[in-house]
Structures are given as C-alpha cells and as structure tokens.
Length: 453
Image (cartoon, helix red, strand yellow):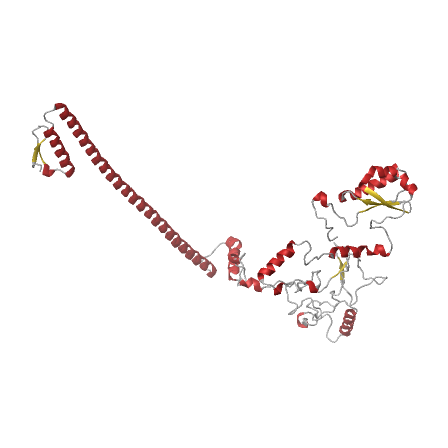
C-alpha cells in the first residue's frame, strides 16, 4: 500500500494522493519505486529520472490529445446543430414566402374581380381607350372559357379510349353503311357516259383507263339555293317578283320545269386541267378498308400433288418440327418439287419444236460454207467463246455463246461489227444462244439452278 503522503526526489514537498486522479497516482507510485530501488547508482538514477519524466510528458500529451478530441467533437456537434438550424430556418422562410405569395395572389385576384365587377356595374368609370383595347380581350377570354365545346389545351396530344370510337369519313363498314351507294341519294346522276364519234368513252386511254371527269357520280339535278328551292323556300321572307295571280308565275314555272327536265350537266373549265369539270358530283369516300386478309388454304401455293402433301397435322410436335427443318434445308421442298421448274421451261419452249424453229435452242441448222469461210477472221478472233450454229437467209448468224452472261449483249454487238466491217459480209442480226443459263454461277458464286425466269 502507498502511504497517504509520499516524498518525491527529496524535494521535501508532500502531496496528498487521495486528492489526485488515478493516472497521477500511478505516475507518482512509479516514480517513488524507481527512487527507492536505484538510490545507490547516480547514473542509473538519472536515467530512470529521465524515463519517468518522458513517461510523464507522454501521459500529459495523451491527456491533452483526448481533451482536444473531445473539444473538436463538441465543436463538430455544435456546427452540425447550427447547420441544421440554418437549413430549417431556410425551409421555414421559403414556406413563409410561398404562403405570402398565395395570400398576395388571392388578394390580388379578389381585388381584380372587385374592380371588374365595378366596371361592369358602372360604379367605376373608365376611359374610352380601356374599352377599345382591353375590354375586347377580356370578353374574348371569357367567351372561350365559357364555351363547352372549346378545345382544352391540356388534352391535346393525349389519346384515350374515346378516340377509338370516332371514325373518319373514309372508315366505314360496308355491311352496315355504304356512303358510296348512289341508290339512296336524293339526286339524279348521269346514266349515259359521253361517247365520241367512234363510240369510245371520252377520255378513255387503253393504258391508263378512264379519265373523263363526267362519270356515274355526276349530279344532273343539283339543289337550288335555299331561297328558291321548293323544300326550303319561304315566300313570306322574300319580296314577290310578280303580283299574286299574274300569268307570268305559271309561265316561269313551266320554263323552270322544262330546264330541269333537260338534265344538263353544269360544268366549268378547270384552270389546272384546262378541261370541263362537272360542278356538282357525289363525293367518293374510297373503297372500304380491309381489316384482314381473306382466308386461304395453306396448300394454295404448293406445287406438290394433293396425294403427296406432307401431313403435319398427323405428326407429333417433335416429328413435325424435324420434318419442317428437313424440308426447309432440302434442295427441292414442298413448294418447288423436283422437275417443276424444268417442266415450266419446257412448256415455254414447246412452241419452237411444234413450229420446227431452231431459234431459242442449241440445234444446228444450215450453214453456207462460202459465208463461213468469209467470216473466218471473225471466228478466229472470237475463238472458243462462240460456236456457229446456223446462218439464216445469209444475213442472220446464230451462235452458241459460252462467255459470261453480263457480256452477252456487248459481245453480240461486237460480233456483228466484226462480220460487217472487218469481214465485209452483210449482217442484219446476231443471235447468241444461252439456253436456260441466265447467270454466271462459277463467276458470282451462285447456284447452277437457272431460277424462276
């Protein structure tokens, strides 16, 4: 046990341990123990004194650092509190400003309503320029706002279910209504289309078809003005042209009925078309829009005979899928079985065999040896690119062409030039026969199948 009072370094200073803190007590006890043990060796004593002093200073520094940390944490907490208080004050100020603005606006609106009410009632007198410049704008805005059919700008560009219910004039169901039907019209239309002297419809073109603007939709008895039409006329609203009982009234009625019975088409000259165009026609709303394609059997475009069609309905899903893949990867599948394209081309060339023609085939015909010897320089230039098949009438030369298809026309023209100019032989035409070959499979990496030409 350490006594209640101890002596440190013979300094005769007494310190009461009970009044010190725990750290100070441990420091003093360590110093007193060091002084009691090493009192005989001065060097060791001085060293231990230095160590004790340094340990004491280290303890003091730790205390100071802890105090500074506590102070810094206190400062941080206070600054945080200040920042939070400042942010709360800013939010409150903004809310207060918003409330003030709302109050001000409501007060301003109320004041403006009171002033406008006084102007309308006549209590407040305003100069004339106010009514000329401002009052019209105010009244226009009020009229637009009060119109129930006015367009709301907030709904522009927004679609809803009601837009699907509305239809344009060309969207109609012919089973329900047909606006193009003229049988329900109250007007009469042209029954006989105008013809020319040869009995052909005017404006008819064999390539482009009909172009006469006067057709079956032209009205021959248009409605008169509502002031004189029998269905809308009111004699009490118009000053009579003739006095009551005048003979001219019946005479004019007979003339009017006779004019209408002629059914003359009223026309005018269109400035752009520069031709007569009927003035009254029934509007054409177009053909009804087809909402779906007509149902067709799946075998409609098949070339396979009906007894050889692959029946996918009787297969399992796995087997049907495998079969479909096999048909898709096959050279000749369900849509173009083997021999179909060959039979198609043979049908196109059968007429040559029936008429015993050699043109369009590789068949050889008559070749005049004299003419062949005369065109020998041209044949030497062409080499194995061509092979002479026939000379027709001494001026038409048929060749079997082995070159590229893309050079066929140019080679034929050059051959004709060689025969006529270089050989001095009369030539009217040169035919290069290539049969079914329409492309260069070895040149462009294509297939040898000649394709659906």
